[in-house]
Amino acid sequence: QGQLVESGGGLVQPGGSLRLSCPASRIITSVFTTSTMDWYRQAPGKQRELVARLSSSGTTEYLDSVKGRFTISKDNARKTVYLQMNSLKPEDTALYSCYVLTPNGYDYRGQGTQVTVSS
Image (cartoon, rainbow, N blue to C red):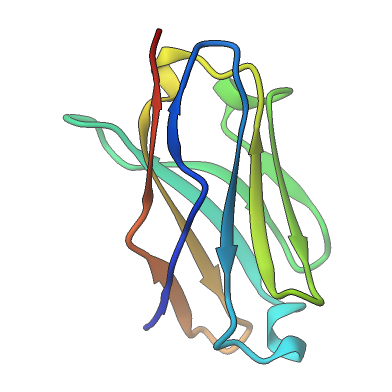
């Protein structure tokens, strides 16, 4: 299991935006481009939930509650996964972490970045 370090979290007012980043410099480019990328979140007292997924083919999946507001993307040249979060709501408050699963089954995960939506 490899380590990732997310960034971009913080305190934002309802309706605001944040962009989370997850660089995966330890993964060679050819593996990065064929990996599945996920963003998870976990709020206090709640189970971890999958927020967004980007498959190696480019297919995306989103948690129903974030559809139309969040966008997962990646930059293969920078080997970085992003989560653009718009129209944030207080219920989006959570610790967000990224997860990369390579084609050979090896995974990389981060410790998370805190997102707090509050006025």
